[in-house]
Image (cartoon, rainbow, N blue to C red; front, side, top):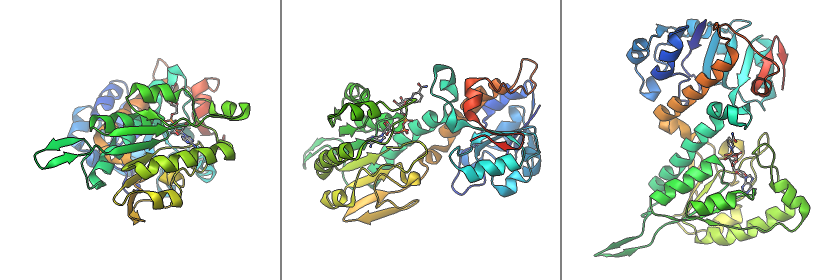
Length: 369
Ligand code: NAD
C-alpha cells in the first residue's frame, strides 16, 4: 500500500506522525511517501527518512496516498488533496462535529486516535496517554522556568532557600508525570483529583493527597468516572473542593492544572478569588487551556500576569518536546495501523472490532460520531 506522511500545517505543530524507526518497519512491506521537510521541526532530517526506506515527495503526493498518517486533522486545503476512499489516521477531534462532517464529506475512512478505548489491547495505541505524559513533564519545566525562585530546598553559605510548594490539580497521566517531575526537582507536592484510586497513586509518588470527602452515594458513584475518565462532579462537591483548594493554593508557589472531562468544557478549579489570594510571583500552568482552562484567567497561547501570578496558557506542551512526542506518537500510529491491515498487508477494516468501532469517526461518506 502507499502510506503518506504529510508535514503538519497547523501553527506551532512540531510533531510528525512517523519517524525513521516506524518508517523502517513500514517500508519493508509498503511504499512510504514522506513529505520533504515533514520531520524538520522534530529534528528529523529528510535524509534519515530516506535512509529508513521512505520516498521523499511533495505535499500532494503524501496526501494522495491510500493511507495518510497525520498528527492533527487535515484542514480543508489538505482534505481536498486526500483521495476519496483513503484512510486518514490522526488526532481528528472526535468531539468536533463540523470536522467529522468535513471528513465524511471527503469520503475518507477517518480514525480519531483520541477515541481509542482504555483497554489493555489498546494501550500501545493510546495517544492521549503518550502525549499527556510528555505534557505533564514539560509543564513542570515550563513552571520552573517561569518561577523566580529555586525548586529544591538549598542550604548555602548565604542562607537557606525553602523548597517550592507545588499543587497538582487533576492526577491522570499528565498529573502523575508532573508529580514525578516536580519531585525530582525537589519540590513539596500536594494533589487533588475526583477519582478515589488516585489517592494511593499520589501517595506512592511521595506527594500529599487533598482529600475532599464524599458526603453522598451519588457523589461517590459519579467520582468513579467511566471508562477511566472523570465525569462532572455535583456542584456541592465542587464547592467543598474549591474551599480546600483555595487554602492550599494560598501556600503554593506553583500550580499545575490538568483536569479534563472528555467532550466538555474543563472544570474551573482555580477561581479568580483564589488567584488573588496566591503569593506574588507564583506560577500557574493550565494544561486544560484549550478546553476553556481550569483557571478562568488563563489566556490561550499566552503567559499573562494577573494579581501578581504568572499564568501560562501554552496549549500544546507536547509540541515543545517534539522529538520524543513524535517518537511515541509514531509508535502509537504504527500499532494502530496493524489493526486495519490484514496478513497480506491489504486494507481490512473490521467494523466489529472494539477499537475500530470507537475510533472510526467517518466512513463511506457518513459521519459516525
Ligand atoms: P484526563 O486527561 O481525562 O483528566 C485528567 C485528570 O483530571 C483525571 O485524573 C480526572 O479524574 C481529573 N479531574 C477531572 N475533573 C476534576 C476535578 N473537578 N477536580 C480534580 N480533578 C479532576 O485523564 P487521563 O490522564 O486521560 O487519565 C485518566 C485515568 O485513566 C488515569 O488513571 C489513567 O491511568 C487511566 N488510563 C488508563 C488506560 C488503560 O487502562 N488502557 C489508558 C490511559 C489512561
